[in-house]
Length: 268
Length: 222
Image 1: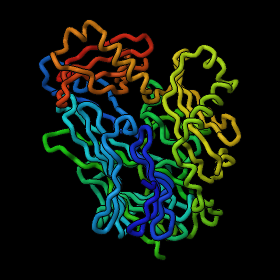
Image 2: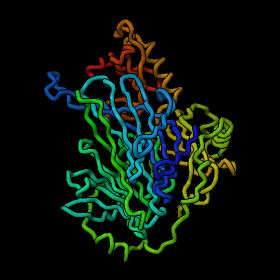
Image 3: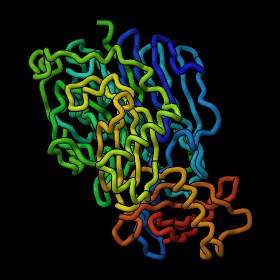
Image 4: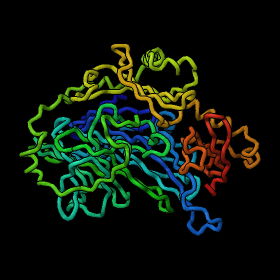
């Protein structure tokens, strides 16, 4: 199977990684570069206990854990399927009581859906999944980009790196964050799943700050991507976005997390 | 990997978005405007291709022959976590000279020094082109997962709590939340035991430095 797909106005490559699921790279929409690479570096899981536990233990006793989604946990083949109005990649991963299906869906109207379906029972019901996607969007070039957030009823420019949780506010299309290219005016819009409890980390691109092979930096330090966040200016430079969802397991599983990504304005 | 280039704080800055000018105003007057775009549109897709077994061997050999890692190679208590292709995109950064080169990113955990090595090997030039050594904790290698299962399965406390049909079903990279937990600062795995139908019964935390089980917890109490 070729790892180059040209369909529905999209042209992109993919490969299965060791730990970051299916990576999509060098993705173009209608002949224009949109994405340098995107992947799912990790899904951490932490566990809670009932606050009324008679033993009096704190709510979270243990730390988080994770298993890589990649060659060692792949269950079945990576699938490439056309659907009405688009094409999708999917792969299932399994590790004991944790099951995942990763999806990359590309629509002919410029939408892209990097999603993850979570299922499997876990070790008990009281646990929360934290899938982390990393996107290196290069809209019409790597630089001259800006990051904006919808807040207080309008789009607002974000000057510096940081952590930007979904506050419940969105524009009329449900978009909460966007990366804008100065020259073309084109934009990458991110719309969270309303139940993802999502947040975005916007980080200036640096060589060496590639997707880590673990969420964990040194003991007692911030985990990634927070460990990459500093105070650097974003305006006019190359930006990396991390989308993080927080999904508590409940009886309504399976649940599909992840943003809608829409490319707009490339026709100008 | 944990280090931020050039003076950046490692703390998680929870920065608030600030009210700024409109996109149009920004387009008209921002510092980035007019800077030359770097050519990312003609990137060579083959650079992303999986490494061949020979390239993987070449990368590891180059890494272990690097003088900066001579103590690690000499003692020989390290695990190769993974080796994957790396593609440097054209930029103004210090590693731009590697753009267009065939590169391997190799991550190693050095047990002798309790440190992680994250290196980029330029396979075209045969050199370690970028090296970061940190106290970070990369994911577990397959060998470490197998070791954790072996240690947990042989532990008497674990064996005494397993039910008929319980087997190791998953091995996770685990770290403790507080300093009271040994796994807070020590490389650890959690082995989940259970039945093949997905029901988990027991969790055993394994210290990978000393090869001992440090916690045995019924799954429902985890």
